[in-house]
Structures are given as C-alpha cells and as structure tokens.
Amino acid sequence: MYFNEQSIIYHNGHYLHPNEPNIGLYSQTLHYGNGVFEGIRAYKTKQGAKIFKAEDHYRRLKYGAEVMGIPFNFSVEELVEITYELLEKNNLEDAYIRPLVITGADMSLKTSSESNLTIQCWEWGKYMGDRLLKVRTSSFERPNPKSCFVDAKVTGHYINSVLSTNEAKNSGYDEALLLDMYGNVAECSGANVFMEKDGKLYTPKKGSIMPGITRSTILDICKEEGIPVEEKHFKMDELKQADSAFFTGTAAEVVGLQSLDEYQFPMEWIQSLGHRLMHLYKQEVLCERKRKLSKAV
Image 1 (cartoon, rainbow, N blue to C red):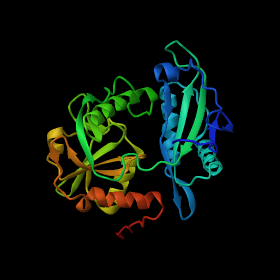
Image 2: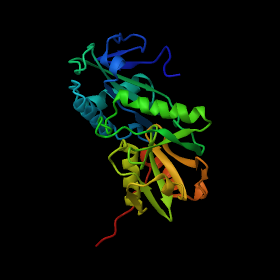
Image 3: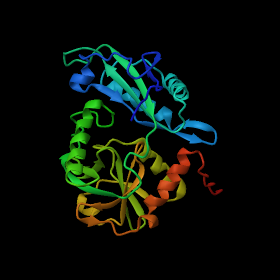
C-alpha cells in the first residue's frame, strides 16, 4: 500500500528503496517511543507539485526534536529541498509525506546521542474519507499537558490515538472525540475539531490539544473571509447543541460530522460553514483561492 518496487525514500543522506535501510532493534524510538515525525501533503497544482506549508511542518519537526533532546542538525531549507527531490524521484505530485526522526540505540532513559532521518512519500487519499462521520466520545483523555509536550508530534504520544481509534471502530463508529483532564472537548484521535452554532465557529483553545497546521490555516481563512470564529474551552454538552461540526487535519483535510454519540447534527452539511471551508481549504492548497481585497481606510 505504501511502497512498491520503484519507490524511493530518503534515509541519512541517501535515496534508497524502503527495504534497504537498517533500522536498529535497540532504537529508543522502538523501545520507548522517543522519536518525532510529521505528516505533510503535496498537491498537484497548475504550477506543479506544491508542498503545503512545508516550512511550518519542518519547523514543528525541529521543535519536537529540540524538546525531546534529539540531536537534529538539518535546516528547514535543507529539509524542504530534500523533500521536493524525493517527490521528483518518485514521480509524485499529489502525495502524503512522512518525515521521521529515529533515535539511536540506548536502553537508558536519557535521550540517545544519535539520530536518523527518514522521509517517505506515497499516494494517499483523505484519511477519513469524504462521507460524514459517526463519532463517539472516547473513554480515553488527551494527555495532561504537564506530562509531556502535547504540541510536539512525538511517536510515543500516539498510543493515545491508537487506543481511542480502536475503541471507536470496535464499537461501530468512524472516529473518537477526546476530552482533556478538565472535561473540556479537546480533539479527535488525529485531527482538531470545530463546531458551528448560530452562524459562528468555535474551536478548543491551545493547552491540551495538538494545535494543528490545518487548524491554523482554517483560522486564517476564516479571518480573511469574514467568518466569525472563537477559540475557547467548551464542554461536551455544548458541542451536543451545535448546528454542525467538522474535523481538520493534514491527512483528513476538512471532514464533516454526522453525529456524536446519540446526537445528530441538525444542519445539512452542504449549508454549513464547514462545507464552505472544505472547499476554500482545497482552493488554498491548490493555490487557487482568490484573496479578498481589504477595504481602503
């Protein structure tokens, strides 16, 4: 699914077939989850392959390595250049890109002094598909922000996402929605959440969430398009009175919710702000969105 005989990955300065790299069995990433990664998308535009917000993603990757104490000396510019070359070698324009920083062999609990960089890419549709989602409230919570760096994409953190996803899918739902330690709505297993009520959007504040790059893009589009939006804490009871809701993420893009537990969102998706933003976001990533001219003062 992710590679074939012609596939090429980048690994520690070399372009190789995915079966070639030797990843050690004593890596801290394997044993303790001490590694960092990114999820990035490239799109086929009229100007050719365009990696959406590549610099933002690689700055976050470097931030993750820094807070976890992982040695990582690549510049953002180098990482972007490598990734475009990798797309070209794989003859891909529409692609999902997965950079992964893997720590070296060290069985102590102090971060390894070695690291490896692997970048992979493959064709991948919208992670959650295009249909409206049936979502359940998870019994798992987002990690306490004092227990780890919740705004870094650390490999080990995603066991929380695996557990909540398994629970949701095993009980007949498409996705899980997690609360934080205070009972506030946080995010789904791998994307941020927005709700619409009376013509205004709301999304959870930073703190316990992964403040996604797609989330930030949607906030920017709302500002430019004059769509009212507020970042605030809210409880599940409030979300279950919303007119509509949607998830945002690099892999998922923008996808609407049909229901949350027993609650059916009453607004037709095609009438919602989420539906409008789904199309505006697609125009944005394809470099086709027309900016609104600001009025002269």
